[in-house]
Each structure stands twice: as C-alpha cells, then as structure tokens.
Image (cartoon, rainbow, N blue to C red; front, side, top):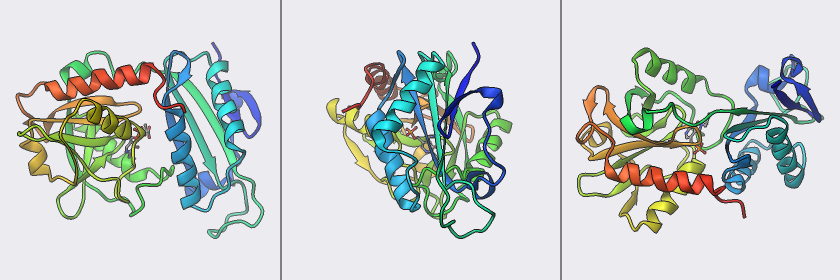
Length: 287
Ligand code: PDD
C-alpha cells in the first residue's frame, strides 16, 4: 500500500511529501515533535501527548498550526489513510518558512507534518531476553524537557550504542547521575524493591510512557521514589528497564557489560510490561 503523509494541509503520497529548503525545522531544528503509539488503529495516550505538545510549543513561544480538535482530527485521518493498526504516528511542527535569520520571523506560519507507519513494538524476543545498554556522557542542552527535533546528541548516543552492540545509551550528567536514554526514560528497582526514576526536571523528557508506568506502579502498590540515581547504583540494582513509546517497557539486563540482577528480565519489569501492554491496548489516557 502506498504511504500518505500530511504536509501543511494536504495528504500527499510519501515520495512527493516535502518541505521548503528555508523551513526553520530544516535550518535551525526550530521545531517540536511527538511520536504517538497506535494500537488497534487508535492513538494511545492521545491526551497526554497533546498536552506535552502544547507545553513544548509554549516553551518555545511557537504558534500552533491549528486548534487541538482539528489537530486530533488530522492525526486520526493520517493513521486511517495509512491503514495503520499497530504502529506509530509522527507529528512535527516547526516555526515555518522564512529567510534565514536566527531571530523569530515576524510573519511565518508554522509548518505541520505527520506520518504514520506500521511497527509492532520492540523486535520479537527482545523484551523477553532484555537488552544491553551502554553509558555515555550527556552532552545535550539544558532544556531536555522540551520535545524538540534538535536531537543530534541523541543521534550520536544511539549510534554509539549500536556500534557497541547495545540497544540504548544511558546518558550520564556531570554528577555521574543517569538522566535518560537517547530515546527512552530510565528506571531501576533497588535491591529492597523500590522502583526509582529521575524526577521530570529540565534534564529529561517527561515521557508519556513514564507517566503511565508511574500510575500503573501506584495501582499495583509498588514502592516508588522519584529521584536521580548513579551509574553505580543502576549496576547494583535488582532490575532496570527503559520506557518509551517505541521501547514500551524494555528490561535492561546489562549496563556496560555488567549483568543487572540475575542477568535476565526481573519480575517487577515484566509485571509493569504486562500492565503497560494492557494499558496501551485499551487506548491509554484519551479523556
Ligand atoms: N522518544 N526520552 C527521550 C529522549 C525520548 O526521545 C523519548 C521518546 C522518551 C520517552 O517518551 P515517551 O514515553 O513519551 O515516548 C524519553 C520517541 C519515541 C522518539 O524520539 O522516537
């Protein structure tokens, strides 16, 4: 089936979907994005994704290209036209097209692009086996809470992971504390059974999956602490995992070659994976 992309008001065949050379997303990475899961043809956790998009736009003083209801309509239409049952919707908004000048243009209209494609979550078998991760210095800017398309440090970190035969790179701040993965949030379960993840400060993206897992952990009455943790603490943890729209809940079994716990996905991670899978299958938070 031919793929369709939405570009500034038109649904176009993928090969003809293009943006202008002077789009500020292309020239300055002056744009924000969302990746939203699709399950059973429906968007997962649509509400918190739209809320985060609004926060990203506001943080960059960027105009929304249309109202939220219209945006949600285009999101669903893009999924429908691509006949995606299980996959992702990608949405990007930039500050628009203008003659190159760093300061904001006076009158540019924001650009809006969407794509949808079928993917079926992490590679089969990976979740059951768990994944290896490496650690890398976090060289990003100080507003990682904004979901901008400026992802070069994340790209370099993920490539380093790939070259090391690992699934993900955990980024480490100047205090030796883990911020997050290149594409997912990081969690540990301490030896005394406490679930730990970093607070959603400016050093990480406040993942929609992260928030869902916090709610699921509360429902399961798991002990939970929101605090930063070091690489050493993660290596000594009973369990560790990643969360994200594309990673789901992905058990980590090795950090820089050191086995975590018994070296296989642990019971808490697998319980949260099962709970999250059910949450996503039911559409998540749609309010
Ligand atoms: N990445 N941290 C970073 C740096 C991310 O890029 C992502 C998501 C997350 C998890 O956020 P969420 O649970 O809302 O997906 C955390 C998306 C999937 C991406 O860039 O492809």
